[in-house]
Figure 1: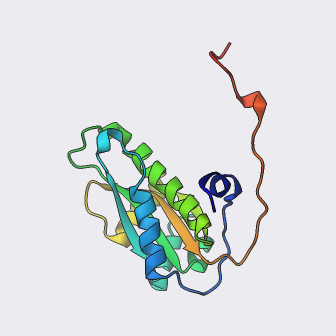
Figure 2: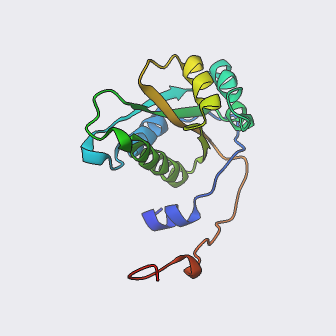
Length: 170
């Protein structure tokens, strides 16, 4: 699948089969995340890979959208280590680029995935940090639920020329 097709046909998948994601698939998704751009090449992202259903159940309790984590055989928590960053205000962008790369890579590999937002909703962040045992200064931006899709969704053409300005706004 070429890159543009992967971007334009990717959809959020929330239903999965019980088939586990292979170790090579997990590594490919991590490599895709770490290939994302970062401010000043600070590479602030850190990843927690969770396959244990008990831990995923605890993670699911941290968000109103947790049913997806119960169904998925795999979850990646994309975090930032905020210690000593050259550009401390940019870690959210660093981690967001990693998440998007991982979502596109999952689709290109024939997997389904969905982005579950945590940061900056502290009522979700703090319980998740406890579940995962994250140390001080490691902040979770998002969790990506991943698995072999048990649903198919048609690509959506979201291009809207009314949302584009050329040269300047007015």
